[in-house]
Amino acid sequence: MRGLVLLLLVAVASARVFERCEWAHILKNAGMDGYEGNSLADYLLTDDVDTAITCAKRVVRDPNGIRAWVAWRVHCEGQDLTPYLEGCGL
Image (tube, rainbow, N blue to C red; front, side, top):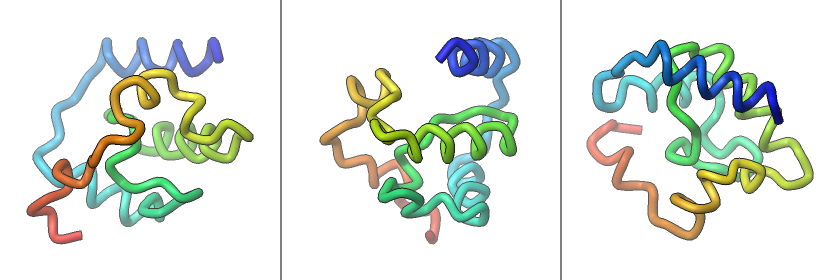
């Protein structure tokens, strides 16, 4: 858990802004759409693509799944996240 917090702090400190849909295409090409039952819109943004994908896959394989991310539970669970992918052609 400390590693995840550190990863999030590093990601925030060195943030990169992706063009709309750019990140969604990267995640889809990495096989994240539907990975462990989660949609592309469920994943956290970071500019370190490889680390983010590896981390996301590790977290959602956990018995708690994506619910292990408190921020996802608080802000995303039960919400329709598909509008974030609208117009991306995915």
